[in-house]
Image (cartoon, rainbow, N blue to C red; front, side, top):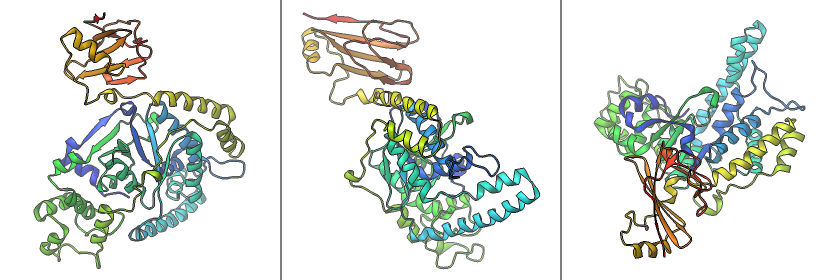
Length: 443
């Protein structure tokens, strides 16, 4: 469920906290993905016609495998490094919400049977989606598939969103991708929606930044957590009559749920009996997550070609030619994702000023890495220094003008601030760049 009404609340009150991004802009980024949320989407959408889904010869559903395989390949081809995080044991406080979901699935099953009897095609599709549940087998299948693809998997001790947020806060990943807004409540520094949407939807990725959320709402993190509890979360009921906008007003006015409860009109607003808001707050602030680096082995490896063919083709009836092509895409994408973003080349220890004296520059050339880059966000230029034998070359890269010097091997895309696999001193610009000034200094 996430947090009720939070997306609109942020759009209205903290618009600078969210921005639209292109899918390709996350090249080179490590992204923690809520696996269960993705699997649920695949089961609802992939290969579904009415109440029918993709199955193998044994009648077992394979929509989740098809979706996970193709969508992960798309992510890898974009140069993104995904980390899939799976749910563990849910907190005790969430069991009431899970029971409600189970009850809704039972009701949907009854409605689905009625729709089948009446032959109402629209209702059949609508209610069949409401009966979907991610099972242990679905999770196990996807964990196995991802490991065969060479993609790291994290099994959270409890909530996947909490574990994703912990990876974000500790800098192990750049952002968290999910559709549940409570990723922000758990403290994810950056949160992405629609990253896992199919490319056919042409929906931009929506990026939220928690620091800008707090700034825009003029709240502390503790107050933001209380706001989310008041809006409505998975851990407890909300106060009837208090929506997101009223919750924000009350938090700004009183500062905490305790102060709100002391001052609220209890005749107008009915507070749930034995309301466990304090325990909900604790779960958001101190969730059960893995912190041991040994248990967080975030390594991307080559695909197990034989294992993938056995699992997908032999065991689950996938087309062997399509899987073979998919494997080739994974292998090509692995080479692409091993290339870095431009900012990863920036080293604080390297001076951004260019030495004027020839002897100082030659001395520097023996100490700097093969390539040093300095970007300018003003004119989108990139200053460049590299060694060529006993010489040191200074240049400035700018987009637009066609110029392909015989000095670079792979590509620099200066306009999008991405460097792809530089391998000096043999450099070749595949993009349209120019060196307006280039000075060779040597013995």
